[in-house]
Image 1: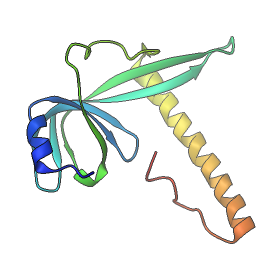
Image 2 (image 1 turned 90 degrees about the vertical axis):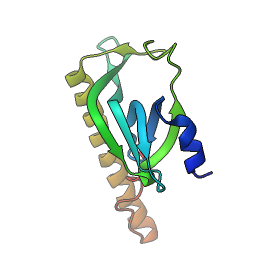
Image 3 (image 1 turned 60 degrees about the horizontal axis):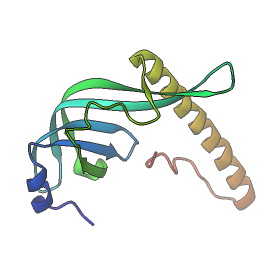
Image 4 (image 1 turned 90 degrees about the horizontal axis):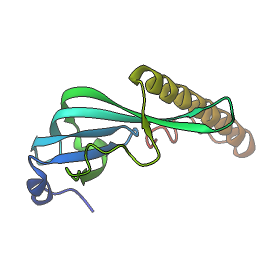
Length: 142
C-alpha cells in the first residue's frame, strides 16, 4: 500500500515514528508533506539501539536519542510510518536501558562494520560458486 495524501493529512501535527530504508528510526512531529510523500519533521530525534556484550557473557541492550531538529525525509526512503502514543512516549522501550550517546553510536557503527564485512565475505563465496557479483546487494535494506 502506498502512502497517499489523504493518509498523511490525518497524521499532520502528530508525533510519528519513521523507519527509513537504511534502518534509521526517526521520532518527530509531522509538520508538512508533499505529493511525493516527502516529509518535514520538527523536533526530530534519531533513536539508535545497540546490544553490548558484558564480561559475564550476558548482553546489555541500550538505546539513545540523538536530537536532530527539523528534518526533511524523501518519501522514497520511508519504510514505515507510525503514530506515537503520547501516553507511552516517555517510557523506556521494553528490554532496553537508556545509554550514553557516544557509547551506543560506537556500538552501532561497530555492528554495521561487522555486518558489511560478513556480507562482503558472503558475496565473495556466492561469486565463486555461481559466478555472480553480490556487491552492493542488501545495503539498501538494513
